[in-house]
Length: 375
Ligand code: AMP
Image (cartoon, rainbow, N blue to C red; front, side):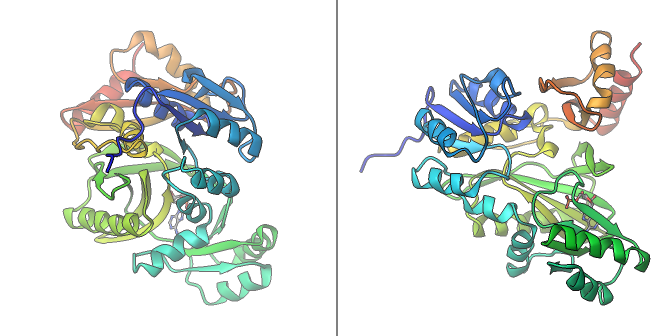
């Protein structure tokens, strides 16, 4: 029997979606000598700037998807909202090793929570509602505070509403009526938010990145620090739960699960079937980055051993901070600055990130201080 050697450089990797995640995947693949094709509706998008071929088209444009498949030896994606028909087509062509199932689940909060619940994994109590009346019935018996979220299409806190007390029932019911398919979840008064990022190969091996501790501001990830300061028992519980999910869903590639930690308990919140913002620190702080390990998994190369080389803090650069950071660059000797090359700047748009690394977290914090205080 002929041994399958996988997809080797200089074969072409196609990426659906041309934002920062696609760009960082492409850069990792370029280190290894691969060629890159990208499909995105925007001309000169962040990934196109580092790619060999750029197809400008909508994600659900089947002609554009077929063109991408023609020039690519293997295809991946940088976000979960890939058109499911396109994903199924690519899977049938043998070009999408990640498959369509992980997308189908992660595009839909109902399916996401149901899969986790059926596996016996810890999730906050939830209910699905499809109208104002259903919402009202559920809320009558639901303990507050709670949160109502759209089942599809929400991100960075968009498409959700916190329900603190009964005075907000009317707003919640209006939300349910407007969005037609929503999930009501119990609010978890968490101590910490962490993410578990791992990579799974096509033959079922898994490598975990160190758990990352996340701080959100206004629903957008503000900063990630590693190692996470959580008890060992919580860490091992989180990893066991995520491993069970990974094997059950037959995940391929880099994948992230966000969890809430409350004392010694964990609650699984969201999954992302791709590299994650809270894993950007791995570029400088780990033996292999989440992006390179992803490329290795989809190309059937053995996964590299992962270890943390240094403590790290990653801070996102939003549009409102971009100009200030650029002005600091010539003045400061600390911080690994990544800018994504996005043409349009909006106040809360993720335009880049900075990673600080050091022997201890105190040293990392000192470097951050030096960066921001540079004159
Ligand atoms: P999500 O879009 O589900 O990731 O939610 C965005 C952010 O809202 C999370 O990172 C949390 O900070 C907060 N959040 C969402 N759901 C809950 C919940 N059930 N309990 C507490 N905080 C939540």
